[in-house]
Length: 328
Image 1 (cartoon, rainbow, N blue to C red):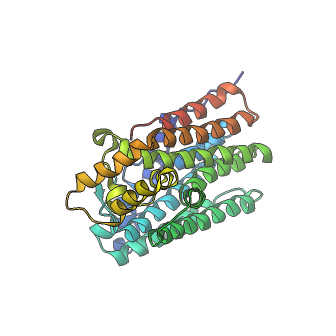
Image 2 (image 1 turned 45 degrees about the vertical axis):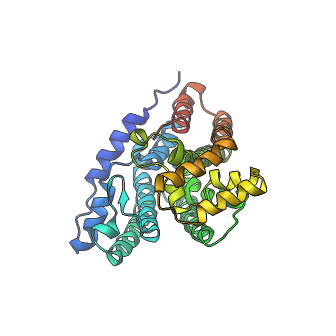
Image 3 (image 1 turned 90 degrees about the vertical axis):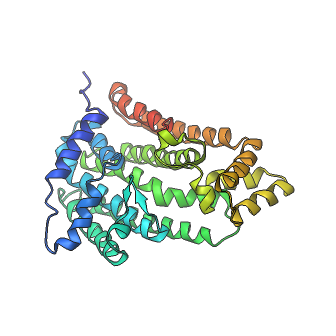
């Protein structure tokens, strides 16, 4: 008989409560206040819960993976603090970003401290799995930084290929999803083949997740998405939608599209409407959704290969579908 799996909602509650128990109220308080502020914000907590779900899938006590789940959440939030500084973002999760609420220097230092804390938690594992676990953790942190630099480089370039963009979001976003599953599998002492399939499950979800964000930025409903749509167009970000449109457009349409992206427009809403009109002519919304579904199918293929009862994997299957068809 298959083991009763935790639901996502149950794991969200368990993890959130465990995170609240952690003592980050240390000295100097000026350093730790931004850290407490950051981790107390109510995000999706997807990555740490993926770790717990992977562990649970193999019948392992989720508490054995709790330190690593916290480490992943700290690592993720470290990247967000530093990304917000580089993007000069004023808001995150509906609240002021750390560098806006305090200052840039403190935000950098708080982010660095979160990075160190992440390693402190990650190291709390059985010695026989520690080298493999830390190799995954280190490699993921390195790739996330490489992805961020790629993203910065793209801002200065006129042309970015689709392959380059997909590699960038793989490193910047998707590898942490993959590593979250991978680490949970390591802790559960799953077979290497199963662990690799878990990694690919998470990686493909991460790629689809970012493409869904690209899509929702323009085609999402403001009330659902939680922020104004069209921000990527106003900021001139080279997303999947823009790059794919350039690839499909004829010469005249390509000139119009690049003109809209390069030049400021006195009417923000008109600029968004002009670009959206070009995207609609090229059927970019449907093409992007189809690509998202391709990644979803890849993810589910790898999940199917994991040597666990089908009914136990159903929670992970439903979660993948829920994330891909979300409205925010």
